[in-house]
Every structure is written in structure tokens, then in C-alpha cells.
Length: 86
Image (cartoon, rainbow, N blue to C red; front, top):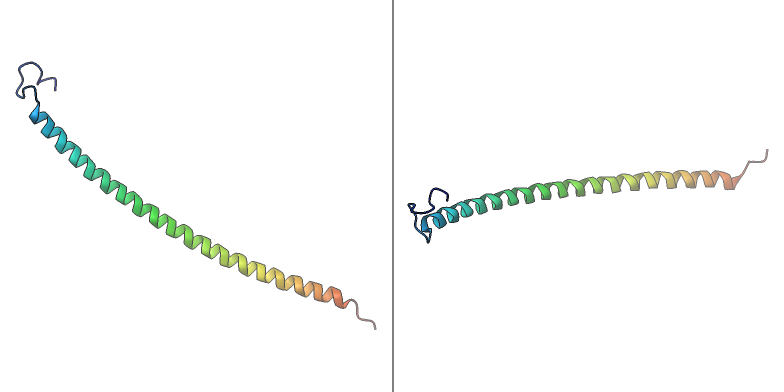
């Protein structure tokens, strides 16, 4: 733009400059769309991993709860029967 000032190669309507800037904007737009798509793909993979982790954790929590419920029932059963008279 500085070299074109005054009596440069591209007079006032700056058609060549506009063409170059339009091409640059088109290339940048395509690159940004590709980057955004890749970012969305990474986010989807992370969300799937988080879902699988949460599902596994829920299964483990239910297994621990079932075990503690069984132990609690066993302890309560022994306590309610009391000592056996001899």
C-alpha cells in the first residue's frame, strides 16, 4: 500500500489491492473453518471419553453400594439375633 501511494501501479479504486485482499480473506476463511472442524472433532472425542469414564464410575459406585448394603445387612442380622444362650 505504501509503494502504491501517489502514482503507483494500481490507481485509486485499488482493484488489484482489493483482489489480493479478497483472495487472502478467502484462504484465511477456509483455514479457520478447517481448524474449527478439527477443534469440534477433538471436543467430541473428549466428551465421549468423559461419558465412558462417568459410566464406568457409576457402575463401580453401584457395586460398592451393593457390597456395603450386603455387609450392613449381615451385621444387622448378627446384631438382631444376639448372643446365643448356652
